[in-house]
Amino acid sequence: MSAQLSTPDDAPVATRFLPARTFWGRALRHRSFVLGGALSLLVVASALLSLVWTPWPPAEIDIASKLQPPSAAHWLGTDSFGRDIVSLLLAGARSTILVGIIAVSIGLSFGVCLGLIASAKRGWTEEIIMRFSDFTFAFPAVLSAIMLAAVAGPGMVTSIIAIGIFQIPTLTRLTRGSANAIWAREFVLAARASGKGAFRITVEHVLPNILSILIVQATIQFALAILAEAALSYLGLGTQPPQPSWGRMLNDAQTLLFQSPTLAVYPGAAIAIAVLGLNLLGDGLRDLLDPRLARER
Amino acid sequence: MADPATMPLIEVDNLGVRLNTSRGPAQAVRDVSFALKRGETLGLVGESGCGKSVTALSLMGLLPDSAIVTGSVRLDGRQLARLPDADYCKLRGNRISMIFQEPMTALNPMHTIGHQVAEPLRRHKKYSAAQARREAIALLDRVGLPDPARRVDAYPHQFSGGQRQRVTIAMALACEPDLLIADEPTTALDVTIQGQILDLIADLVEERGMSMILISHDLGVIAENVQRMMVMYGGTVVESGPTDEVFRRMGHPYTQGLFRARPKLGARKGTRLKTISGTVPELADLPMGCTFADRCPLVIDECRTALPPMVDVGPGHVVRCIRTDVSMAANVGALPA
Ligand SMILES: Nc1ncnc2c1ncn2[C@@H]1O[C@H](COP(=O)(O)OP(=O)(O)OP(=O)(O)O)[C@@H](O)[C@H]1O
Ligand code: SF4
Ligand SMILES: [Mg+2]
Image (cartoon, rainbow over all chains, first blue to last red; front, side, top):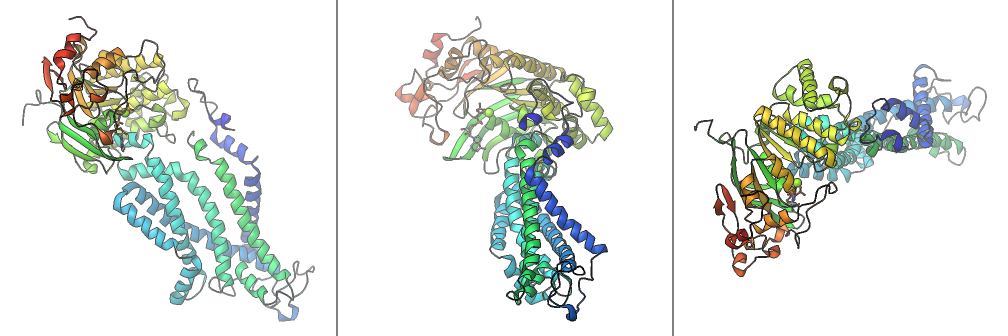
């Protein structure tokens, strides 16, 4: 594979430089990238579909037709309030993705900025940022969500903020570590020798060179955020009814675990598909955007 | 202020650098002094680890924050040692430029070479994008890159090592600096290309009236390319003088050792000078007296008591050795008297 990207030293070949085609060419042959991409797309498609269409209104309660088995009207049956499972799953994907995207964005913006600053400034600035990040790391998302919920009340916003904060330290550490490696490279010394300041070097040299690492990690963090969202909703700290969510579905199913165990299986499977899909996608991207190859670009 | 015509461009006085190494703090450079007028060229020669790059980086203000720099570095009379980084940024790439050993890694893989050559012009000289691009193409043409108008938008990996080094030279010279520091600019290149690159650098330095500090571990490179030279060993200058003068009558046993051990014509690239018996001392535990004492064939007890002073042995030619009477009797040197 690497033979495609490397060019012989003394015979530079401009025409062989086709990054887009080589990337997609390799991507579509990469098994975990394709499978992960397909599963993630399935989740995204469900969320998008739920915006325009669901078989039944997801929040519609119909006690008369509760706990029905799968039928032509309700493909996967109904829950204990008579809500349509398929509709709940589709609409639940929406909350999951919404919380995931916002939380990971919070984590990325703070984590990457703090990591880049720590790496550019070094010295006591780095020390303070890293100690702060260690401190935050010691708080699991659930704990910060409980504390936040105590102050602001439970809900989607609370869980987004709690999950976002929980993402920051991991991303700070990763950013700082990879940025430090770039700062040690000779082209950074050359850039400094040409008079660039720390800010310019960070934006023009460090960030582009760690971008692929960040993309891969963001995918993994997305999967973690989905798990965390489900956990918080399950505990009643996250998304509140009537807003559907996979975690809430699990919570509702818990009381009926022996009566109708399939109620827990569906949201569980949805969570598993989303998390597995994103992890596979992340693994695939890691291979495809391997920094050793990215450096050749 | 003194007359700019006679005042040195760069004046280094008693420069010392203390670094945190893996073996604790160490004096990587001590007591280095020299002055360079506009248009003058100076060579820095010595084995690996003797402090050549650290000296160069301290002139550029590019040492790690933990480094302790003592002494003074003046550019046109202005003190540079311990200057805040923000002020230094305005000088680097503008009045002082540097070329590095590894053209493979000195260019950012993510940007086109045109962007990288034009960038200092836009920043220091406030050129417009179009102006800077035109100038970059002209510079790339001047450094001998084939078909610059077309290759200007290519990425570093699309060039050979020699071509990349030409690009870094174009980058370093973009803003017409007064001083160029070239740190082993050809060590990583094929022997056949080394000469071409050195000739290019020499031509450009002369054409633009720049001063240059050329760093090399190869006495041959120094002999052919600079007017004055300094030999470094263990962080100190052990011999310095006009190149012709030093090569005519080498005074320091270390310089003589280097000369006797010089690689023969056609040696493989990257060959290091290793044939002086013994190894370079660890900086963290340099001997008390002469740094070369452990390897010197002429060593006597007195050498180990204190760092030998610089001794005048000819016009502008000084040697840090207490036994120059014996060492110079051997008459080591290449040029006829
Ligand atoms: N950033 C640094 N931190 C700690 N020690 C350093 C650093 N840079 C250089 N040194 C040490 O300082 C000493 C001098 O190094 P320097 O790079 O100046 O050698 P040099 O003469 O340029 O050798 P070479 O021919 O290998 O380039 C070496 O012992 C090296 O280990
Ligand atoms: S001072 Fe002594 S040890 Fe040092 S170079 Fe001279 S003779 Fe050798
Ligand atoms: Mg060096």
